[in-house]
Image (cartoon, rainbow, N blue to C red; front, side, top):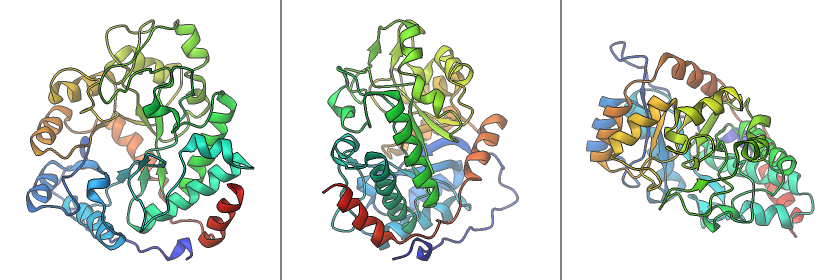
Length: 348
């Protein structure tokens, strides 16, 4: 099939009475179909976007219907995100979608690793675009370290900044060519984490100069990307009191020293690396300088608390969001079957 044959959704007219500023949140939902209660809630609070997980995925027809229903609920062409990295972090799976190797495994196996990485991610973009998903939470620019936790390690691309930068750049280019926006993560670097931030808070004790020179280097090189996601990790020599997501100090480093000017969303604030109530986490993230709060589990009570605490997007966040969404384009026409065959050869 050709990439240009993907179905397009219709952008509904937005009532003039609605604010031009969406709520500063990206929200999940409970299952494979939008419930009446969820539709009413989303219509009322108007989150900037939505994120999908395996619990929301059944088959291509169902998924196309769901993404259309989500956009209908807010009356606009809202961005719909997913984590489709390949390997363990892959929400669309067989039999309807291709299974991909973990990124690190593919980089080590491929005869031409960077070309294979582009091809892989162009195929992923095609699969996403066909079901109405237009943002993928990748590439990862974290570096593999000796202590990198297994939950992250094989999702990464390599141990050196040049390799990781090249892989992240071609990944982003492949997504954009396929009509999908990339999200750079995990800013400003998560590779030194030796614990799983889904369950506890990682702390890095290395000197600030070391992490600036190594961990942050790929993000400096990729700082023109339009969207990024924070890391729930403490850099003790920069701010010993708060993880990057809720640290005004680290967010200042991201903006000023790393030079990242794009839209910044949090990693999922329901992860146990963060402390306090869900509302506290959301409020602290926005206060620290994040543009958008990401909440993934679809729990209605938590989503109510998140949207109340996050509030409407700031004028600066709106401008960054507009710049990101301006990159949405129909896919560049390509022979998807030929690319799939090429990837098989590159990995043989």
